[in-house]
Every structure is written in structure tokens, then in C-alpha cells.
Image (cartoon, rainbow, N blue to C red):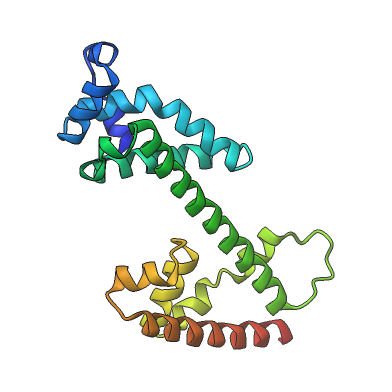
Length: 198
């Protein structure tokens, strides 16, 4: 179930009639109409917070908003009214998702910088980081890596997962994930240097 499919459902005007308390109780109980209502009631708040924190990137703010409401739905049993208002809980989830988005952005930037360093100085002033990244994003070289190394690097670069998240996704120990990452990067570095020389 995605937020897109949820928001397309008809709420029969119930959204306007529910108090915040009723809405949250319904949501925690698993009522999808209450999730729809919560999205309509607080989605703008979440989107605004995300947009401001992400430098006005509307597309990224929309992605974060969807992730927040999916997290609300999946984690609804964890909401405890005695610990604070629902909006506070929602804002906390929003801040975590914004932090995740910023971390992913940083990892992409670091990858571009690392790729540029591996290729050496580029004389062409028209070459931009995206061009370097396109050149390096390794379709051929990545495909030549052993499957475990390829999987770890794919999850890190294309799905923006951290090493602990990769360990959780694969079921491998964190040390194994780190080893595959190190070996894969070392092999890619060697291949990219060879390409740059050739």
C-alpha cells in the first residue's frame, strides 16, 4: 500500500468531521480512511518542513512526505498519546526522514567527489560532476565484481543505504558488509585508474 493509493480513496467527507483525537485513534486502530484524513490534515505541514530543510527541492520534499506517512502507517502501534501530541510524533518522524534524505544527498555528493578524484583532473571545463558520475557509475565495471561486492555497492550507491542498513537487508554481519565494500571499492578504483590511463 502506498500513500498515492491511499490518498485516491474517497473519505466521504468524514475527514472534516473527525476531531484530531478520533482521527488518531482510528489511525492507530488501522483505519485507512483515518490515514487518508491525517495525510490531508497534516501533509502540508510535513511537506513544508521537508521543503525548507531540503533547500526548496519540491520533488525531494514530496518523496519525504510520502515516506513520513508510510512510516506513520507502519509504525502507528508505536504512537503513545501519553508521551505527547500526535503532531509532535509526526514532526519527529519528519525530522528523521529529512535527516535520511540529507544523508543520502551527502553520500551521492561524496561519490561524485570520489569518482572525480579517481579519474584525476579533468581538463574539459564543460565537464560537470553529473558527467563524471555518468562516466563512473560503473555499469560495466560494477557488473564485473563478484556478486557479494556488487550487491553491497549497489545497495550503497543506488539505494542510498548505510552499511548497517545493508547488513540488515542482506542478513550479513556488519564486518562482512564492510569487507565486501572495501574490496569492491578497491577493485573499482584499480579499474577506473586503468581506464583513465588508457
